Image (cartoon, rainbow, N blue to C red):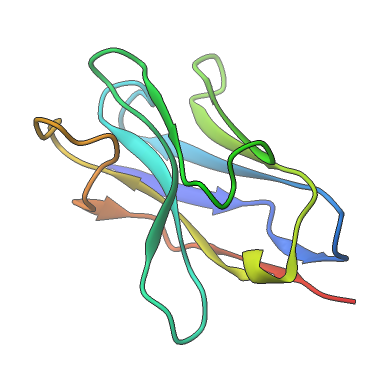
Length: 124
């Protein structure tokens, strides 16, 4: 059974760091377009960072660029997101997302399969 399982969320103070991890099971992590999305309370889901399968190009949203780093660990079959200098506006549930195939012109998956999410709260 194909699954995406996120972990690593929690409560952190502004300026702090967290490392999220998404374990892929039932498939290898580099098989599909993959990325991290988030959804804050009352807001739409948004792409945070993604890896395009065809060429490995990495996308970061403007609001996290320079603070977040995405990385694929093929040995562990995980997709990780290192988050530094966290801000209260980073508070959200973070999801690992894949598509079954790469859509032309897309830097990120559109959401064929989602993990259950891990919650990040940035607050004093």
